Length: 182
Image (spheres, rainbow, N blue to C red):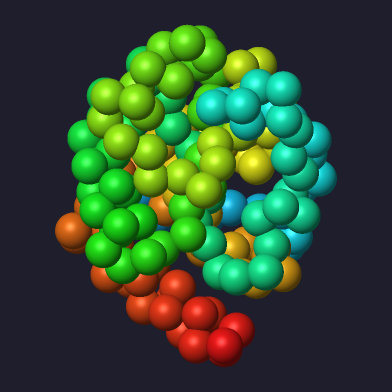
């Protein structure tokens, strides 16, 4: 074997290991709940869908406008949604936060029962059994929470559980939007 080939056999794995290490290093320290959304800075997608608690009543994105709000994507099959639900009920009652729900890929009766048993933090929750609105929102999994301004522009998105640790940054933005609206 020539010296050049021997060097390539030694150097190639080292270069590949270095490239792999560099690739993996980029992910260290990043928050897995901070998944960018292409909707940031964009208006909510148009929709016309029934509400969960009144399936004969349809709502649109226009019904969410007028004040800043959270849009929470949830489902009864999602254990993290259950974990965050009490927190959502608390901020809706105690802090008077407007929250709209999107019940994602779920069964109507199971979702209705969930809200009756655990409390209903939502102004209304859109029934999205086929995930059409979820796809338009760019949902990657439940739960996800979007912060919108009074005009329905998406300001921020949280993928994962909304709780005591993840709420303060969103709360700060929500309060600033609320102040600007009043």
